[in-house]
Length: 122
Image (cartoon, rainbow, N blue to C red; front, side, top):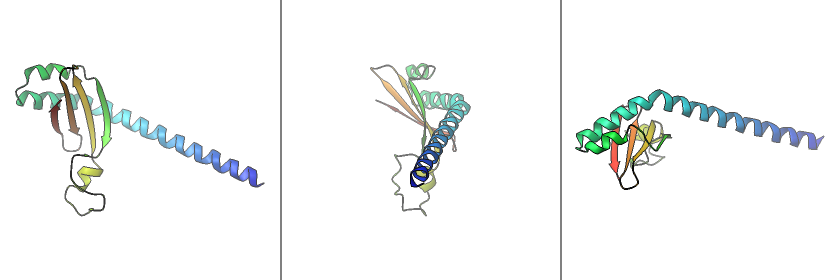
């Protein structure tokens, strides 16, 4: 009886983990699909303002695009829950887009909630 209980627990835990992975993957795909064009437009606009004309063509075919929760560049610690930027650091969804050629790589971090973009060149 103990073996059946342990096996049942393992199977249920595996099912729950799989369910969470599928849910997160589907949510990520839906957010990327919904905000992809807005993010690419905003990144192109920001890079044009910075004066890089060649950069605007790089956003037409990005190398990678992924969803990230929170902005790791903000200097806010997990325990500072009363900090004004805590939600932006740990809760706001961002699309991180990498574009350009191997000689000049561009990275754009698009904040979905605030509709802002930050473009960096490497």
